Each structure stands twice: as structure tokens, then as C-alpha cells.
Image (tube, rainbow, N blue to C red; front, side):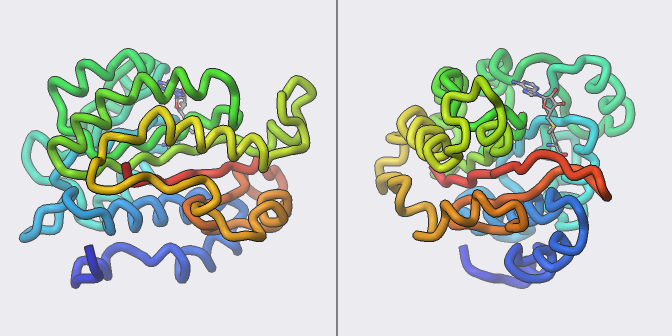
Length: 259
Ligand SMILES: C[S@@+](CC[C@H](N)C(=O)[O-])C[C@H]1O[C@@H](n2cnc3c(N)ncnc32)[C@H](O)[C@@H]1O
């Protein structure tokens, strides 16, 4: 999908929002904009005439989901009517109850996303999954978690020809956590993590094969992921530091894949 008039509503993640994120303590906004730009450039997920999402966008909610909702509203990406195309999910039932009251026009699911896959396959048309639960990167349960998403990806590809997976994980815990299997070696954890996701979710799109890990990153990626000052797009990833002001949080890494 090339640039079009509506693209002006969706910021280029390499320019304006990148500058902004570098001057704020949190780069999460940059990542949100990058995610939207990535989804925007994915063939099959948008209506040709209104340039709205044809598919449903599923995302973990948390306490800051209003930023994503606002971004999607600003971009006029959501549909009008009863099926607006956004489904928020959170294990925290109270949070979902509050979000349901605040945004009754959107869909909300309480409980573990992994337990909602069959419902989503039957009642929704998911083309985007933003799984930003901030789990440590490259842990053993990564494979099991992403295996549960297979039916969702398969259905999305059968409906739209494409499926976008966005996954945000915690890089810092790999570096610091004494029990981490890859302590001090985020690049090893990142490779394992990515290869596991590609192995579990690849293979549905018969029109092309998924990239290898080495094709997803520039050659100097190890320096960049270890440099606490670096934030921004890095190949198929975006990196940012959580937290605000003097309270900088963990470094997070978001992978964007077209499956
Ligand atoms: C970082 S927040 C999401 C942020 C939000 N997407 C945004 O852009 O502001 C992560 C949330 O996901 C929830 N969560 C983590 N794993 C989950 C799972 N498997 N199913 C449902 N909710 C989950 C956590 O309870 C937490 O509130």
C-alpha cells in the first residue's frame, strides 16, 4: 500500500514523532505511531474508499489504552456504527469494566487473551494483534503463548490476505535479572524470541516466506539494543524506554511482523 492522502493523517514514524519521543522520557507514543504506520502500509487491511480499517484491531488494554484509541480516532482509522473495529483485552476485569463504561462503542474482553482466541475467531475479524504485555523477551513460554494465536492469524490471513502482529517485550529484564537464561545477552534472547514467533506463526501466507531473523535488523543492532540512549525504529523493531521524568523504566522492544 503506497502513500495516499490519508497517509498525512498517519505520521511517519521516522520523522516527527521520533523527534518528539526523543525529547520526552517515554517513547511509547513513537511506538504507537510506528505501529499504526506499519499497519497502514499493510495491503488488505483497509477499505479503499474510506481508508478505514476493514479488520478488527486487538490490543492489550492496560491503564494507557486511551492513547492508542485517541491515535486511531485521530487517524480516522476506526469505523462508524456498532462494529468500530477495536477490541481491548485485559486480565484485569475491573479495568475492563471501567473501560466498557468509558468507551461503550468499542469492544472489551476481560480475562487472558489466550482464552479468548476461539471467541475472536468466531465473533470478530481480527487483522491486527498488538500483544504488548511486557513479558521478558525470549522466555520458554513465548512459544506456547504464540502457538495459541495460530488460529487467529490463520483466520485473519484467510479474510484479508495479511495479518499484522505487534509484540512488545522487556529487554531490560534480560540484561539484569539474575534468573534470566540470557542475562547480559539481549541479542541472544532477541534472536530466540523472534525465531520462536516466526516458527509458531509463519507458514500461513503461502504467497511469500517470512524473513529470517538476520534480515529483520541492521548489522549494528547489538550496539543499539545495548545502548540505553538509543530509542526509535531498528529494522523490524522499535525500541523505547518506559517511564517518565526522572523515573525511567525498563527498555522495551516492539516487533512488527506481517504474517
Ligand atoms: C502494557 S499494558 C498495555 C498498554 C496499551 N496497549 C497501551 O498502548 O497503552 C499491558 C496490559 O496487558 C495485560 N496483560 C498482559 N498479558 C495479558 C494476557 N495474556 N491477556 C490479557 N491481558 C494481559 C496486563 O494486565 C496489562 O494491563
